[in-house]
Structure formats: structure tokens, C-alpha cells
Image (cartoon, rainbow, N blue to C red; front, side):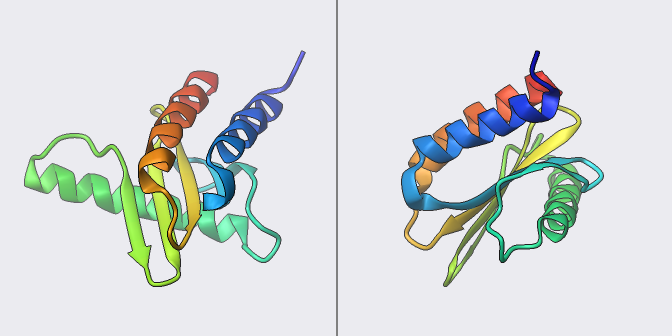
Length: 123
């Protein structure tokens, strides 16, 4: 029987395989910012990524609540060196994705939504 971490790791692996070289790193993160499973590159501090992802989603939820525009589906930061994307993965977790510059955002978004749904189901 596989552990929950192993199952989540498999979901992240499938996600990165389905998106080619666009993904520089991905992590499943608890709403408190604690990293559950990370596939971040060795030069990236996964704990900091987890904390930033939780903070981003917290701010995004406050903004969407104040603007009364509904429940956030994703948050994306685009910079000159790449993108950082955070999606809710169920009620208790997040999917944090570090993307390379020029990534196929449409494909990544489709695959990310599926991965987030699966992680939410596992947690």
C-alpha cells in the first residue's frame, strides 16, 4: 500500500511529465505553508516556496472576498525570468508551480487543474 506522500509524489511526477520542460519545480503545500511533497530544483528552498504559496493564496482570497468576485481558482506571478503559479488543491492544500520563461501556460493550466483535483482528493 502506498503512503499519501508517495501518491502525491506520483501526481506531481505525472504533472511534470505531461508538461515537458515548462515546469522548473512543483510542490504540494498545506494551507499553513508546510510542504507535503516537493519536486523543486535543488537550488530552490522548498520550505520558502511553501510559505510564499500559502501567503499568496491567503492574500488572493482576501482580495477576491473584498471584491466579491468569488472563490479564487489560481494566482499567477509573471516576471521576466518565469512564472509562479498557485492553485487550491482541495480545501486543505495548494499546488505551487515554478515555470520557466516561455512556458505553454495553457497546457500547464489544464494539467495543473487536474493535478490539483487529484491532490485534493488524496488529502
